[in-house]
Length: 127
Image (cartoon, rainbow, N blue to C red; front, side, top):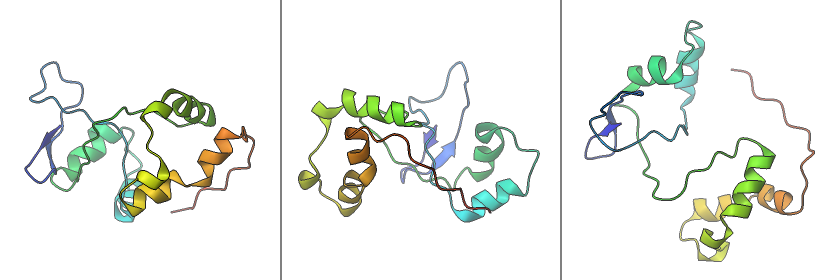
């Protein structure tokens, strides 16, 4: 990825041999509803990185993560991440911002610690 001084994506190079920089896309996105609607209006889209991201170049804000990035797409992966990373974890009382405290105090963390893995997922909203 290439960024401007404000951290906005100005170039995206998917799996090229000699990328022009040393930043990688961690593939975590927070999308505006308009972006989801744009995607839904284009059923031919099959690849996010080559068909969606290029369209929004110049309008994608970034967040630089200095820490370890771990996929927690399943309960088992989240449990493994919690086991592997406690020495680097920050206590909830030590976090400096409201978002971090809210995230760290979310009930899913206590559920994983206590082994609650069988919960009925809520249905996803329809666009």
